[in-house]
Image 1: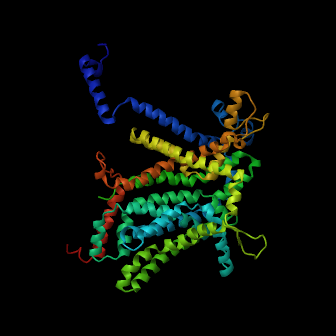
Image 2: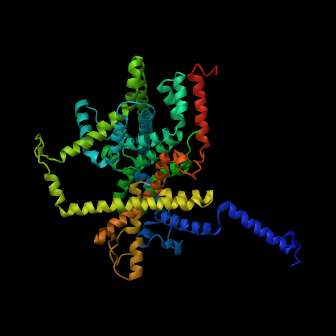
Image 3: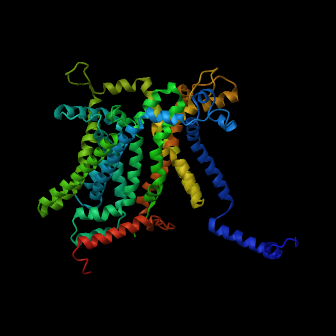
Length: 315
Length: 265
């Protein structure tokens, strides 16, 4: 023991134990206890693995050859990683089949206004429900909230009939155009958006708004210059949710945009799904192509929608 | 060309919404002071009222009314009122009752399971360090970013059925045949014990667990508002320095620009 000339071992035995003891105590004070951490990590790791497992299958399948996909399950690659060919061709095929050059921009054209519009309109309404006193306020709010229970499926036929009637009267065909999807998405986002934003706005300091009023600011000025900037966390988190929902939506796009020139990416994926005869590896690759934007939004803006929801009120 | 048309429509969509705001503002500016204060709340609410009335309230009411009528098969002929006949037919139809039971199971199982998982994730990750917390949350919440169509494709590789004799390339049947040495089972058409319903619920739980966590954070806000009522609760950590400093800055600027008093005070 004394042969090894490192300073650590040169220390007396007593001092070493004291050191270890101190270290242990410090860890305990910082993070409750050490042992549950390991168990928690293991449990969480297991849940996380289960959650990622299906996606892993999709990812592996998207890089396999048709012969491989038809012959063996995707999990066999763990046993025999190089027994069969890997290929990137699926992505090339799926890119062409999805017609990404068109459907991607259609998705953008549907999603961006269908996100910005409801957020702005709902913010105005939430402002009115928070900072105005008028007759029937709570009743109106209750009605808007109550309409949260109306599912989009229920509205499809009446709204389609409305659009058809509108087309007959004005000669402007809405069905198949972007605005049809904007309107439907914006409307069905409304109840939840108003509820969320009102909740948030109620936590804003009333004194600030009162003071602005006394200084002669109009409600529009207060809304744009005070309330909207202060509500950025809530607005951002709702906008991210809405973006993900609209981008990933299939039903509304399928009914109101359909598969013409304006078809969106989920519609393209659905079409690709119909061509499964050419192999599931193409469908898997296509699924991953459609996932790129939501995943980028999800990971890039994660800080916003998690923090935005939990952010404390302005102090 | 697609980029071009997309760009035009985005600009158009945003332009229309700005136009709505601008014209509402203009409208209010035109009226005199007495009316202004009375009208203003409704001006702020007008876009929502219009959208909700036409595309939410009207379809809902129309559907309710239509549920009491029978649509004529001949063109141009109106609907006839039939009272509760449609309801009677549906509620005595065993197929529909089975569907109702499925729905009931869905609304019982899926929200409960997602909330439990979302809460468990929140509680468990809370005990871990910052980095592990974000990593695990990100992994579990990834399905939030997935479309229903892509989720269907994903789970297909688990649930689907290949007839006996074919290579078992779908996970569940591969495990089943491997373990029991029996024929593969068409899981998604197997309704004994509503098994196929439960299998599809798993997909929904997988998709929505992240949302459950997010919304639990969201909906707890109004209750967190009054910290005095909860002893031992130390108040929300101000973990959004960006937003608060931004809003404070904006607030300060708007004071200077909008109020003549602030320059002297």
